[in-house]
Image 1 (cartoon, rainbow, N blue to C red):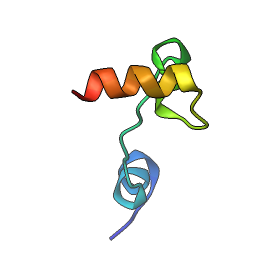
Image 2: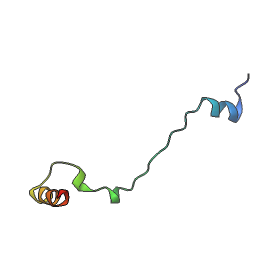
Image 3: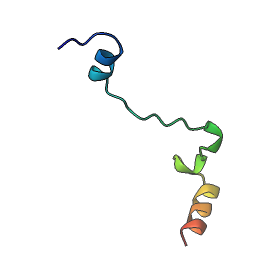
Image 4: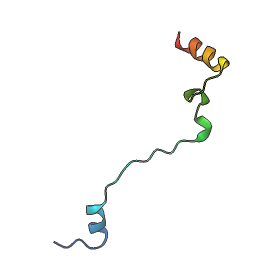
Length: 47
């Protein structure tokens, strides 16, 4: 067997999926430290 060129590259490559997420959609509420305002908002959402 010969592993040259594109076929050899594809044989020994491990394809992985990549998620690209915009920082604009990242919510600050996900990360601590939480302010009093943030905590009260979380409590309202969790009801």
